Structure formats: structure tokens, C-alpha cells
Amino acid sequence: MKIFIDTANLDMIKEINSWGILDGVTTNPSLIAKEGTDTRTRVKEIAKIVDVPISAEAMSLDSEGMIKEGRELASIHENINVKLPMCVEALKATKVLSGEGIDVNMTLIFSAQQALLAAKAGARYVSPFVGRLDDIGQQGMEVLGQVVGVFFNYGFGTEVIAASIRNPIHVLDAAAMGCDIATIPYNILLQMVSHPKTDEGIQNFIKDYEKSKKK
Ligand code: G3P
Image (tube, rainbow, N blue to C red; front, top):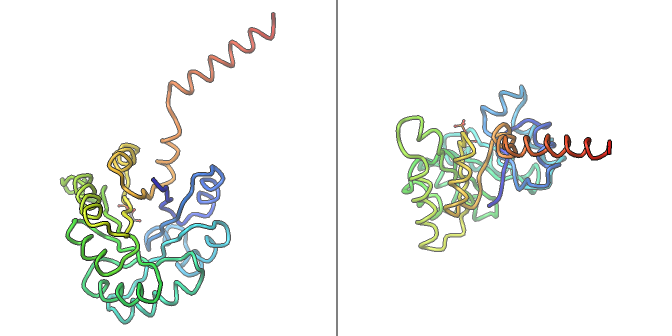
């Protein structure tokens, strides 16, 4: 499974890239606003520090605007793909942009039916929001599994990004079902590294090593 980081923070991206595990970066307007910058400036900066796909969200709500913005964002760097929010206008824009070789990440996906339409329109990625479904008492993982299953049945080239990841179990479940990608917040990547038995083991080895040195 590919691992993307879900952040617009440059230090976090640099740090995770240094681990040798980074396959992509996803941003959204909320993550960009948290950094006190704008999408164009920040994705340009991200493209300078990592050589992986980077999602940049277009803010227009009509297909013409989405296409114009999509072209502008994609022209910043060859690694940039355009995030569009699932709706009829985004499907129309996806058809045009994908026809021009511009990758689209259809975001705010909450059902397999939406994902199916996005894939048919030519999206390179679809992003089902697992955590936000859980938040409203629905089974985010169940929807993710349906998307993965439908795409497998028909051999769609569209990759599924497990998004709105809230804990390491979400990552494990996504990997176990064969989801292509998980876009993971920095704090959850840190949690995935740690295990109390690993920490305990390291401490015990250090203690025994110190003891053996004294002999
Ligand atoms: O980037 C899209 C998605 O991952 C957002 O997650 O936690 O705001 O629901 P969240």
C-alpha cells in the first residue's frame, strides 16, 4: 500500500520523507489555512522538497472554473494532481482534465456509487472519507471496502485513497482490504511506529549491554 501524508506542513513532509516511506502528499483548503498560506504557494514549496504526487484542491464550484483552476494548478509542477469535490460539475471537469492528461483526485467521497462515477469520468484517484463517515455513525471502512471491491471487479485503473484517517487501525484495515493508498496525518504515522513492548525491549537491551560492559 502506498503511504501519503495528509498535511500542508513542510517540516512534517520533510520528516516523513526522511523515513523512506513517503509516496505522496495530500492537501486540502483546511490544511493549507492551518499553515497560514495559499494553495499555489504551498504546493510549489512541497514540489521543491519531495518528488511524489501532490494533491492541490480547486475551489471553483462550476466545471469551467474547475477546469481553469485545474490547468493552472497542474502547470505549477508535473507532480501536482487536482482535487475536485464530488458533484456533477466535478465529473464534467474530470472528463476534460483527465482527457488532457491532468490527474484528478475526486475528494469528499462518501459512497461507492460516487466513487464509481468518479472512476468512470476518468479520475486518477478517489478519496473516500473514512473518519467523517464514522463521525456520523456510519461504517467508514465498510464504504471503503465497497469502493475497493467495485474497482477490483471491473479492473478500473483509478486508485483508492483511504482519507480522513483517524487512527492506526484505519490504516491497518485499509491495508488488509487491499486499498491502494492511505493518506495519513503526521501524528498517526508517529503512532504507527511505536509499540510499548519495543520501547521496553530497547530499555532492557541497553541495561543488559551496560551490565555486560562492566564485567
Ligand atoms: O484530506 C482529506 C481528509 O483526509 C480530511 O480528513 O480528518 O479532516 O476528516 P479529516
